[in-house]
Length: 528
Image (cartoon, rainbow, N blue to C red; front, side):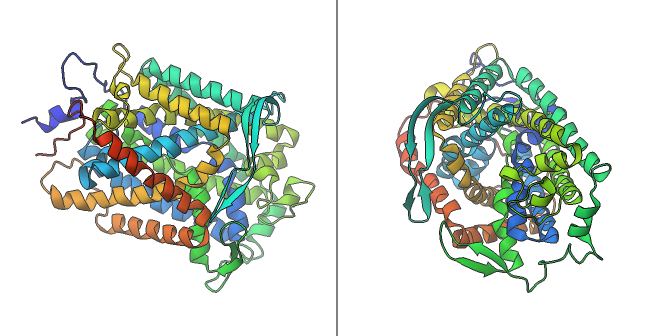
């Protein structure tokens, strides 16, 4: 029987002649993938929507505390699964081993159709739009080939369409970035990891600089008085147990009043999305050195760093800009966090400090951030499709590695093609609305796998055991399930479409599962 050490280093191949994945990611690179995949463009814009929803500085920050608690529990829990099964595919493997191949496939299917490719498309289009700050000809309105306008169509809780199909200079830039990063990552994991390390370090420094500026020269006496004074009364305003908050049900539905627990769940759509993709390092587990140590550590260090930075950045906004504002205000201070122009809170904050140069500084920071995020997502996502293919559940060619560079070339290219099509179609923005609900469902299922595997395989080697088990994993499941219930009730436009996309994977699974499995590539040896 294969030993657990051999299982760790053995890659998903049936013969010695077949190229194998190379374990070349150290702790720094692994942590860099976690950080770089998490930090995209979200933290620079979602705070405006959170501020409008909560209408309270205390609840504004509390939303990030909820996100931090859930994400850290998730990382601590995934650490056990990652150390136990350090294989390419990560979360796909955990679901397959604990709940069966259908659940693993549905995760991989949703990742390919929506989660990974939709996010890659979105951050690359954001790159194109912010490049337009420096080169005005790069714009979403500068069409090179306008194919069609798809009018809005309401189907139950969903509003479909209302998008422009074609190629403009902004999404052409996005497509070129998508293709460039796919090609770069073909030429070896080391090159992709090097790019990730450089851009992650740069974006971490830019966010740190934003925090330092806000806490020092950027502090505004007017903003601090509006958000915290007098005697912290403004800070706690609208945050009482009996405070009610307006929420519009669905699209065009009635506006109802909800308590603070419900509003905190509703605004998690933005904060959880900004903190998502922390699980991407598990996808590359087969290429991590000393994975039983480095995978849990990178998850904990990476998520801990990002969540701390996110909280401090949001606090920084409160030091520079008032939360409440006038949507028609003439200045950044007058519009406040709630009504920052195009929801670009970070740009408004820097404009308040550096005036016209603020927009340039923030655009540069977002270009660095989105490029690094797209690279991390590109690198990691292809490993899931590779693992699926080795199980006979994806295109056969995707399960092959480049004979020299040991990278899943076909997986990278298929992912890039689909992401590029999403850029052209304009549908990525609507798909992103559905991500968080679908992701929460899979997070709940994966953390449930902890309990399942502890029962089914109690003697399997666990180099790291989830901190706080079973209390913390159970708390995560309870919190995530509560958010899902609230979103189903009050934001059906974010929930039912996501469920439909997941369920569409069932007939696809039935088709793929009829094909013969080429080998037992991703079988896991869980014996002591």
